[in-house]
Image (cartoon, rainbow, N blue to C red; front, side, top):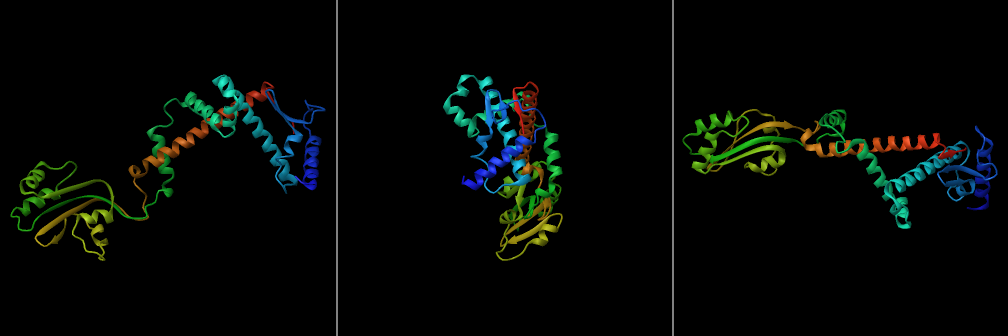
Length: 285
């Protein structure tokens, strides 16, 4: 830190000392805060004070830094208390500074608070519904079914009747007919991109098939001696909300992350308040 910045830092720390709201418990020691046996002195801030910061911004930065210092040291001491001497050796203390031992403590907070149930199915669906604008399709997706058979097949009328009435589970008669005559039958029960669904049909390159996406009932395409019937049972187009089942893992991770953060913050706040009340931590700004 050059001479000018050093003077600014010293003036700032002096100003902080002159804005006392409570008697300074560290008179003569130039100490800003204490957490257990650890102390933070005014001189410690000289090496971390950002260059160019001044005025109200500098006071706000110092207040935030001091509180963060107290919280971090309280968490380190709590981790040492909970996890024994191993948490205090030099390697783990360095690891803590890189958030490893902090993560262990945070996992402890989460387990003690929520056990193995961070969220319910209702929590997941509520999050999905509240964040629909974040789950927007950029392509069309469908569910459906396809049957391919020789165009000369004599029982087409019966096959079409069975195919059109196919609801839910595959009808045994359609399967029996397909197996007997070596027909291709394919049900797309999970969401599939419409462009991929079209690969199951005799489509032609550079032709558009948006009209087929909008039609209901049994549709037909013919490729030489083979006829293809297909039905689009469900669809969602670009701009609509992605179905929950397609984003459920993202939703689950988002809800879990948010819930963990809430638990850790609440436990950290509690640890901080108790330490202040019991005089295990003191902040004097």
